[in-house]
Length: 399
Image (cartoon, rainbow, N blue to C red):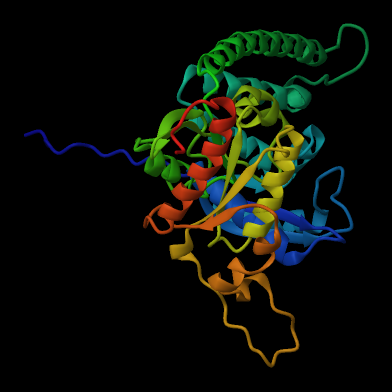
C-alpha cells in the first residue's frame, strides 16, 4: 500500500560567515555594529549566520582585503563547519573576490551584492524589478573578469590564444546594451510617474523617510488606514506607496519610500532615482527614527547624508522618534568618572537633550502601541494647514 503522507522537502539554508576589518581610525564597537547589521541583512536574505571574523589593519589588502594569516584561519573554520558563503562588510574589487575565492574555495559576497540580492527578492512590481536589474548589471560590469577565469589563455603564441578576452568583451557589450535598454525603460516609466505626480495637483505632499526597518510602513498603515506590507526585516518596502490622508478637514498625500542604509550602493541610488523623486518633490519630510536602536544617532546621520546626496536636505522636516515602547537605557553611575553615554539617557532625558536644542519639530511615539499619535497628528495638521493656506488662501477650513 502506498504511503499517502505528503513528502516535505526542506529548503537548504546556506551557512555564512561574516568578515570585516578595523582600520587605524575605526572604532571597534562601531565596526561590530556594522557587522551586526550585515548579519541582519543576511538573515533577511535567508542565510544562516555561523561565525564572524575581524582583523585590525592599517588599510585593507588590495589583493585579498584581509591578510594571508587571517585567510588561513578562516579556511580552517570553513572546512570544519561546512560553510557555504563568506560575506564581507565592504565592497570588494573583482581581483579581491577572485583571490579570496581561490583561497577559501566557497562563494564570496560583499555588502553591495548582498543588498542587491535582497532587493531582487523584495521587488514585486515591474518597475522595482527593472530598477533592481539595472543596479545588478551596473554592479556586474566592472567584475566581469571573475566570471570567465575558466576561459583564460593557457598558452601564448599563434594559434594558442583562448577565447577568454574575446568572450569578456562580448559579454561586456551585451551587458552595456542591457543597461542602455533598462535605462530607456526607466526613462519611460519616470515620465509616467512624473505625470502621475503632476496629476495630483498642488495637494500638500509628505514623504516618510528614514533608515530601513524603523517602522515607516507601520506608521503609513496607521495614518492612512492601509495594509502596506510591514515586517521586521530590512527593505520590506521597495515600491513607493502613496495614499491620501485627511486630518480633521485638511487633506494631504503621504508616501512611503525605500529605507536608507549605511554604505547604500551607488548603483541602487541611481536605479531608484524615480522612487527618490517622491522625497525630492515632497513639501514635508517625516524622518522616522527607531529610538530603541542603540545606533539611532548614527542612523540619523546616515539618513541626513543621503538626503543631502539626493538634493532633499533643505525640506521642512518633522522627526518622529518611533518604538518608544521598546526603548531601554542602561543605568548610569553618578560617581563614575566616565562621561554619560547615549545609552545611559532615559527617554525623558532624551526629550530635553540635543534633540530639544535642534530647530526641528519632533515627537516621541510608538506606532505599534499607538502612543503619542494624537500629538503627531496635531503637529502635522498645523504644518500641512500652513502650506495649504498659502496655496488656497480662500479656503476657510482654519476658521
